[in-house]
Image (cartoon, rainbow over all chains, first blue to last red; front, top):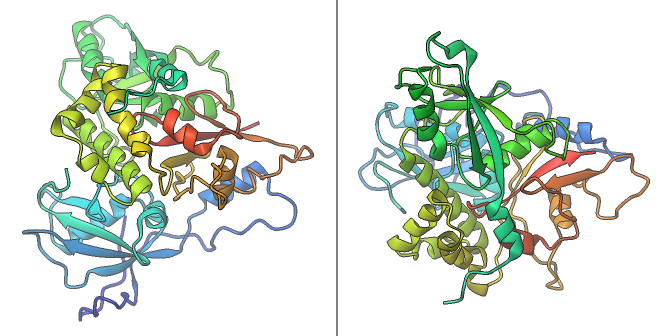
Amino acid sequence: MSSSGTPSSESPPASVLAPDAVVTTVSSTSAPAEPTGPPASPSTVIANHKKKDTSKVVVYFRAIGSVPIMKQNIYTITASNKFSTVIQFLRTQINYRPSDPLFLYINSAFSPSPDEIVNNLFKCFNTNGKLIVNYCASPAWG
Amino acid sequence: MSLPPSSPVAKAIWSGSIPILFTLDDNELCGRGVDMGLMIEAQRCSYLPLLAETVRDHFVRTGQVSGPGEIWFHYKGTPLKWHYAIGLLFDILGLQASNNCAAEGLLPWNVTVNFQNYPGDKLIASCADSNVCKDAFMSMIKEADYLRNGTTKKVMNLSKADQTQLWDGILKHDYNRFWDVNHRLVLNDGAAPRHLPVRIYLPGNSPVIQEPFIPADEQDHPRTLRQILNDALPALFPLEDDATAGHAAGALIHGVKPSLETSALWAAQNMAYADNFLHLVIVIE
């Protein structure tokens, strides 16, 4: 996974979205087309579903306890990414090595598997249009 | 405290098993020892890491491997996600992939064992510690609870003993131990859930679909599996069963294809895997 773009140097107010996509993946040229006309064949439906969705969602990082805070804590991320991308991005932002313990939670409630799709998490668990990701250096919430 | 439901469906699902023949990857055969696989009748609702020690012991005892090394499994080259239930893996990689809703010809399920070259790019970090598997399981239980209630209070309010009993029920394959606690979660203590914990798997390694599926319509009637599937995949699951359509898609749950007119809430309560999610594996006919 690569990240591109840079966060703006000053932290935006909490209510303002980061202006640029910070985490991106190599994306296809177009979003999945909505089927029109006659019903799509199963293979078309599956092929459309597998196309990389380039839409983005807003992720709001919140530090818990003694863990480095981020200068900017609201980012947009490509919705078709896996949650592992969020984990990697956060580690880079707070200069954590792979061996440093880091625990991520959604809504201070549960820890998604790294292979869950960000878009699914957003659709199911966003709060007012933001996916709240809490992070800490030791396990919280069970 | 109510008694665990004695749903014959829940019980049959719990008893579901798959014969698996574990063989060592050809590339890892070290030339000595007996080239002998291991057959295990694996529980559909259990997880591969819970068999890992038995499998490793077998290959060490028969002299095929020396012992250490991170164990992982693959089927026809596809690494098996250890945090998926065994039955779900078989339904996706066996039944769905072969476009075959009958298990004949696929059993015993030939799973290949590796102790080298853990595919960290395809599998989440290793499950060497069985606590890792338990943690992954509990996270799923909490995610399911969050979908039902918008909080994880029901799981968090379980006593330590109850939480242990849940996992212990899986380890020991003890229906009563597991369901004694699990029924409070899946039945939500009688309260209507906000959303149903459902995941949908399309063929061809497509991204998993998970949405906040609503269990009842505006008239408070339970919505059917077809309606839930239509929310996510309207082209594959039209609401009107169109006889003129040349194809039909179905959904496998625990290897069987239930009627799509089944109440989705009932299915989520009685046909979920141990992780509290109803996993729907889509097959195209």
